[in-house]
Each structure stands twice: as structure tokens, then as C-alpha cells.
Length: 184
Image 1 (cartoon, rainbow, N blue to C red):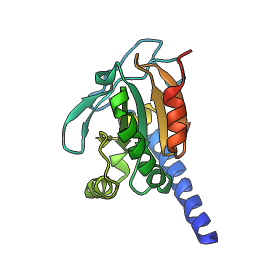
Image 2: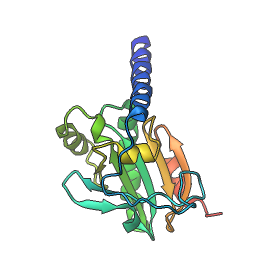
Image 3: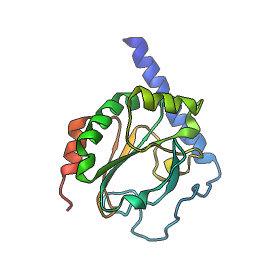
């Protein structure tokens, strides 16, 4: 039990180090992200979620704005992250139950932090994930959304407005509560 705690602490320490390292790098333009100058765009609840465009694991381009009209759970994760592995079965079950109710999950893999891209596909297959998996290969979107600790998730309403964010693993009931909250 003590070894497990030490391993988890080392992983989190590594994530913090990675965040500091990434913050020191020259800020690049997002891969094909739309750089909005709208002052209402931001990361706080009530702000318009910054748009982005990434390619999924199978090479399909997706853009956040394409999901207007749906509630979106925007999740940032990596295959080596124990809390990410913990929440994935919960996210898949939630997706299966809610995808017909105008709810989408976009699980952005922080591919720049993966040792091998093949591991992402193996992970998706192992957990039978059927929601879109965009790849952030240059850490542009993860930086923009400040996904320093993972998993990090944003809840976005049908109008593209952030309603809440959450750092750490989510379970089915938490996602259900957040998605069913009424807009203020």
C-alpha cells in the first residue's frame, strides 16, 4: 500500500514538473486552433470555451465548435495516468447512456506526453472506448485549457459556455449531476 502511494506521488510530481517545463517553452499557435479575441472566451464557468481543431486517433479532424447544440464533457488524459484509467470505464458507460440525449464526450489525449502513439490505440481498444479521442500532439490545447494535472475535465453547455470544470477522476454519478444541472 505504501509503495502504491509513493508511485502515485511520483507520478503527480512528474506531472507538476512537466507543467513547469511546458510553461517555459515558447508558446506555439494551436495546431489549427481558432484564436479568438473575444473577451468572453476563457476557462471560468460562464465563459465561452476556446475553440480548437485536432485530429482523432484515426486522423479525422474535429473542431469543438462542431458540437454546438450538444452538452460536451471535454476531458484531458494520458494512458500512463492511473486516475485516467480509473475514470475511463465510467466515462464509457456514461457516454453509452447519454449520447442519444445530445451529450458528447471529447477525450483529448495529451499525445505529446505519451511514449508511443500505439499505446493510445491499445488503451482505447482495452477499454472499448467509443467516444472521440482527439490527439494533442504539440501540447497546444492542453496548455490553452491548463490541463496541468490530469485528468482535467470541462463541462460545456449547448451554447459553448463552460458551466464547470473538474480536476481528478470522475464517476458516473458526478457526470450525471453536472450534465443535468440547469444553466444559470
